[in-house]
Length: 176
Image (cartoon, rainbow, N blue to C red; front, side, top):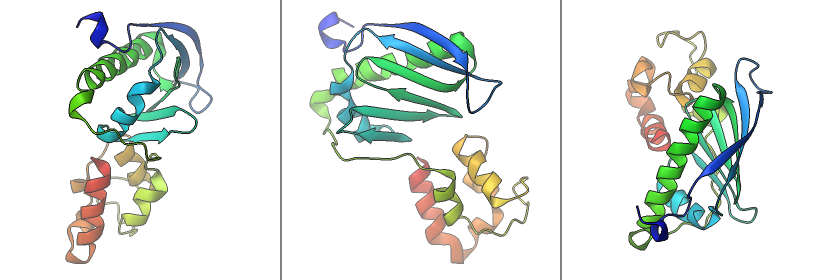
């Protein structure tokens, strides 16, 4: 891609630390070579599992169990599996950011604040029977598994009952 179509030319990993939320994982900080905040409203319009705070110029994306937070010139990643995984996440973001930036003329930016879907949001829409049919001990554990990409909605048999059709529809919409 020509330089004039790229918003983010590269990044430099500056810190690799133990993750506060999960000691088996890492927290990584990287410097972004370019200001990526102009892409945030376009990313907000098309990327699921994203939180966008326009006033603070912060964007967070959940990728599996990882939480990636982007500021105009900095990325902070939690629950990554070391520097190699962090670089892979940064390469993913760089490609996504540059692709969205290249296509910005075709997209309608969204400047509305969005927040990440949390486990309580998912749990509230589940049947809350703790039946274990999904393989988890509780519906809350299943909610965490859904958000981490370890489970699919189809793994909850009670959710297929007619009385849960609206909750199922809403969950399917939120999980995309």
